[in-house]
Length: 631
Image 1 (spheres, rainbow, N blue to C red):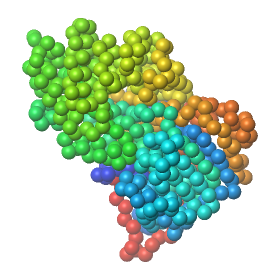
Image 2 (cartoon, rainbow, N blue to C red):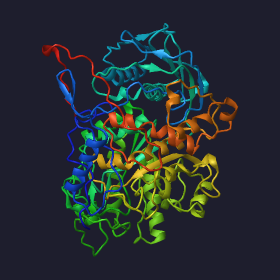
Image 3 (cartoon, rainbow, N blue to C red):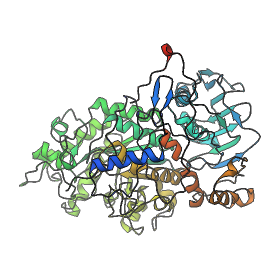
Image 4 (cartoon, one colour):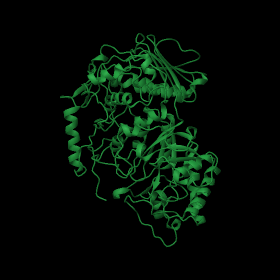
């Protein structure tokens, strides 16, 4: 295949622990779809730099202490409303007389529980860089005192496993949840309620005002995820950790890693070392590939768990196995001689389903992976094994399912495994494009549950439009509206709503080669999927109060907001209301820019005007000037 164009300048490196609050020194800029796919990487990089210079960068560097920040581009003095959160909360009750100003002497008080304290430390780490405040974290027993920010574990059963209740008053902020996961999700809401400048990595002059009122919030679905294909192109640990931060920002709680495919095997297996050493040495386009050591994988899993995200590893079987067959030809069907593959065709490879050596291989690989993975799920793939006869395929899947359950794990597979016999807890990941799927519906009647990833709505490797420089279009062109405009509960014919466990957005990487390209394909569509997975169909009404400053919006925005000014009218608004969502989503652009997140400027969205540059704080004395080392 011809080389794919790059859509960004060479990337800066990341630190060993990247996060959304730790962007690179020169943030990736929003990328525009109008770049022709025939342009070279250098031309595209130059275009991106010129666009950044004319649209986002200040005329002169902003000096923050002894550090020169060339692209500080967050809005100063922006007013955030309580109902502008993504995903949309279940219930929002603004109180315009209860706004809270975060001050330099604020303290974060947390219930005396290690997991809750960890969330408190994460909150402090998010807020300290931009505010410059010390924000000490202290544990308390019982009811926290008034003032500052309180994170409290409670026995309120109605909050569920991931819900939270947030109250903002003049005196302080109180966040309550039954679990540390609920507190973590509430922290993401709190983060969005502060001005966009909170994403800055250096102190800025800003009034850190939180809008007053209360939020009650609980997720619609327990499974809210994204998939990253690290097999077609390999992405290092730092890139995966950054993706985890993106998921956490929007309350997603599952990261599905597609670890193996024809082009590369990405996880070290001690009992079969050639899988990674040989099978991991290729990728699409002929690059060097790579793999994760078991220590790397443990680090990814631990980093995700600290953000209340469960990693789901996938070993794709029996097809998509060419990399494994190159490493171990004895697993291939008789008469075949596998060779390294760097293309993008599918359906040509499979392990020999008639050989006992194949099942030894499967048991060893899944056994080691199960031991490395604390989460309850193992994904066995199962898609596009076109050369395996149907009856042989079904017997293979049933035997692999027994191996998984014997390891104490729950089976997940692509919906092609539906004809196999049901095993307790089995989950099908449905990626079709037509809602009438009798085979999947039958599997549900036999006990299967579903994760929905419809390729024409949720596949984030699809192009936004015909001129998008990377991606595919076999399922659809998916801009933000297309990603948002479907209901998981009613999407499949003859499948009851209670069979749907949630939603997952896969990103296949045949044409995606870098972290910035990952972000370009994720944003702004990932928040749309997150809202479908989290927000209820029919939220409680809220009254949208507006300040005089917020009424200085553009006429179209004023017209939109006027529909929310009446509480009764608001009660009729569905949670998944495109006209409301597109306004909220566009308002996140300054946050992404400040956080160094690349994104597509979709014409679906009313993007805000050119952001302003926050005023720097006075520089400290030279001997104590802060030094920052962006990752």
